Length: 294
Image (cartoon, rainbow, N blue to C red):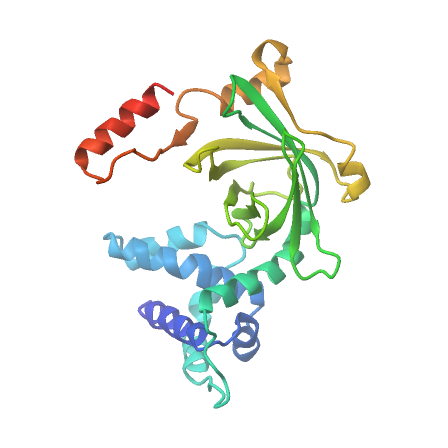
């Protein structure tokens, strides 16, 4: 069981040397998706659980419960061989460490996500809290592979009829990230959605949180629900929809469910800039008072 710690450190070392997960999978004879689950979920959860005091047996059971494609029996039976292959993997002399390993990892995940997005491709209507009125904000999203199949393309139409195009990362059947730039280039103002993915295929509903900036460029976070309208990935079908603000008195029974989920007290988290030349503890108290009156 102690081999798991060394295996985790060695995979991390190889990744930091610029070796791709597919190369490691080919060398060790593992399926790329299994190796990815092992590295991204099982081993980190195993290490964290043991650090919190769990036995290695309980920690491994917990870590494996978070994925559905890694067998405990097969994993334990292959540990000696896996460790030997990982430590025997040579780093090519002409191999250069990426200038930014994190950017390299994002590029890999974007490519890998194209293989997973078939589960979630289609047109959705999202529901969340409006920041300008006591209304339910409804905004369409289109999730689909890009034309050259090298990333997941996501298109968003706001309630104010502006269109944003971004990327999606669907990498481990548990969560996903959708990222846009909310402003015109070259200004950068990221609009990020975190979605929890259900543990079954072709879900009609996704839920999560989105983080963005308000009109004063202060960060906010809200709940959001995606309801699938169609499996179509055609832009013409998407453009037939529009975003809108739906007043509380105009909600249908179905929309009222989404309103109650996303638009209640505690479903809107924000901070604001304090007009103070020096940030201190008193300003934290002032900030809470300002927000509570908004």
